[in-house]
Length: 183
Image (cartoon, rainbow, N blue to C red; front, side):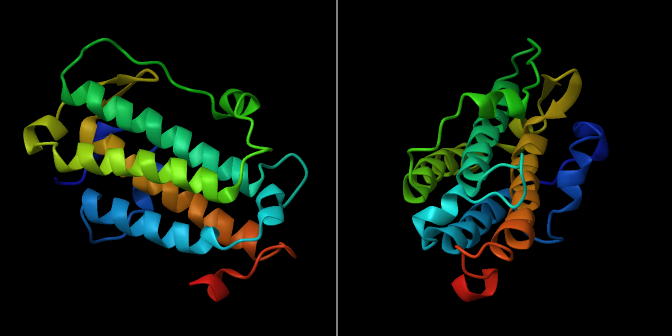
């Protein structure tokens, strides 16, 4: 599937599309980004999961949950558009969602396992999305979006948070190893 054109996603999501590496399909990038992030986070000590780099910022466990939730939303949108449903979809407020995503008693491993299940489902969806289906568009959050844009937004959004995890969480946390030591 080709990458989306600029008219296939909202201006807000252009930030994520710009983060995509110059080469790689949606399928290959979904696999690669999950492997990299999983390796980075899988061996963190549990106490690191509750680390936030600043007051009012999400913990590492909350970031994992946010990535999982956002992927669910965008994969659902992709499916909605692939099936040519014309009903508009709402936006979603990540901060409202996080208020009700209680991860305090969950482990990093459990959160990664849930995210892997979601990622595997996204991979199956991409694998079975024809070029014609990928071009189908719909409305989400009052913007025209294509199915393929949803898949690439998932990847760019993931890369955005991966960079934040490396720079702001793992490089400053006394509880967490540096990013280079876990690769």
